[in-house]
Amino acid sequence: MLLTLGLNQVYRTWWFLALLILFGASLTACTFKRQLPALRWFSRTWNFYTQPRQFQKFALGAEFEQVTIEQAIPLLEQRRYQVFRRDSAVYAHKGLIGRIGPVVVHASLLLILLGAIVGSMTGFIAQEMVPSGATFQVQNIFEAGQWSERQIPKDWSVRVNRFWIDYTPNGTIDQFYSDLSVLDANQQEVDRQTIHVNKPLRHKGVTFYQADWAIAAIRVRFNNSPVLQLPMAPLDTGGKGRIWGTWLPTQPDLSQGVSILAKDLQGAVLIYDNTGKLLTTTRQGIPVEVNGVTLTIAEVVGSTGLQIKADPGIPLVYTGFGLLMVGVVMSYISHSQLWLLQTGDRLYIGGKTNRAQVLFEREVLALFDQLTSPTPESPSSAPLSESIR
Image (cartoon, rainbow, N blue to C red; front, side, top):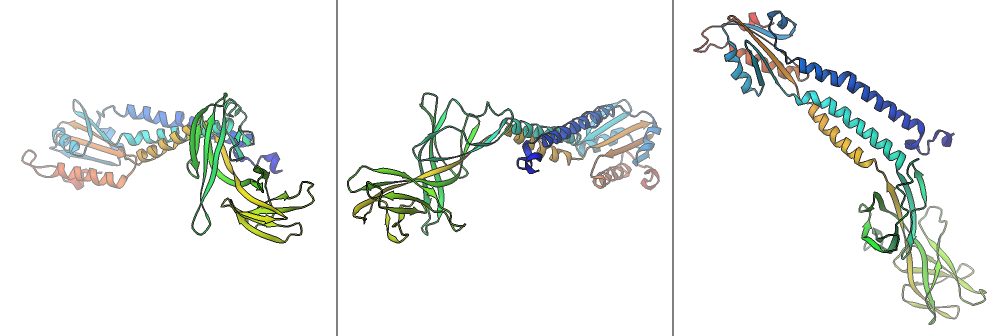
């Protein structure tokens, strides 16, 4: 059931992609049916109101006597309104960016969805465990989109020049390091970097992360023989740590031998006989006598564990998240509008805002107070309590 429903790889299943497409279609429809028409409607609100009855629809409005538009315009400009006048009518607004914010939010969400779809269809995830000195191509792929074939490297490879671990004074691991070289089709080095956790290698859209490590082999010398390399395999410890081991013959006919165990790359190894008895412990470069021969550990060879990923949708996702943050901030800006009309000695004012209603009311009431305050140019005006609806 898990495999049939794709619950082992949810983000690449047909039904999840279908949900993304449905969500994107819904956002697109909302943008064209609601957001863009709202902007077109806004462009029509630039029409100036020329009839006093048009101001009756405003919940926040006022009618003044012996007050002129010339008195109101400077007060609006002081409050950073953009003022437009045609004859005896005025339109003023500020915070226009707040009307565009929702459109930007929708566009950013569409970008994020598109990036997720592109990444799931064209990206891949692989893992490789590579010994020091080995060259490899990406092959161990366990997650891949249907169109990921072009992203998988085929004309270049990677060589692990060296893998090592830094340890803390108390013997715990501090950091893993891998010295990697990128080789072209002719095995020529085109890039070389040392990676560690949180510092990956990126080449042609493929990212190599330092993810794990292991012991691949041990190099030994018998007496004065050349260095021999034997592979090491992980042993089952029941969850009590990681140990690698191998069996090393000490006689040409394989009649005798010893087991060698190691738990890290610091060079310390344990040597056991065929009965499981601990014979000795040694370190890299220190010779010991075992079964009548001198055994020297030349090197404990480590393997670097690399997680390899390619996701062409990441630039779209990052761009979408950036626009989303900008759009959210824009959406919090209030878009305030005011209309004014002068008919004879009467001035009509009405306004509205899309958010922060209380702050807008305080601002408009302060404007009304200034208009009704006696001045040398306007010795009298209608009481505010009688004219404000």
